Amino acid sequence: GAGIQRGALCRPGLLVALLSLLLFGLSNGIWARPDGTEWWEDPFSYFALSNVLLGLPILLRRALTGLLQRRISMFATMAIACVGALVLLDLWEASAVVFFYNASEWLQLWCVHHTAAASDSLGGLLPELAYPADGSASKPLS
Image (cartoon, rainbow, N blue to C red):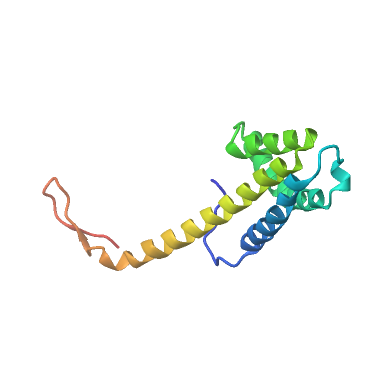
């Protein structure tokens, strides 16, 4: 499966997503870097690198899991995009890929949590007997 687990929403995924949001927001200062300035001279580059270091290991683990199952998943393509951006020294782009990955992971967790909670409330609406379409005797569902 996708490795999605139902549970509390205040898990490490939320903390990673919030920290990634903060680091990505701070890394936007890269756009104000004067031309000709090296990346290591720009303090905003370090926020972008911190964001990449926060989320890339998780992304790589998910990508490798897919590759071991002989599938090229979206995680593999995002990892390739992130590594490619790092090779090109486009730190903001790498940070953006990691941020959107972390945000989508948390959003997916939130959706699964709320969908499962809503479907649990439907359990009381089930009838006690099932009536087959072929006209045979009704059968209890439990």
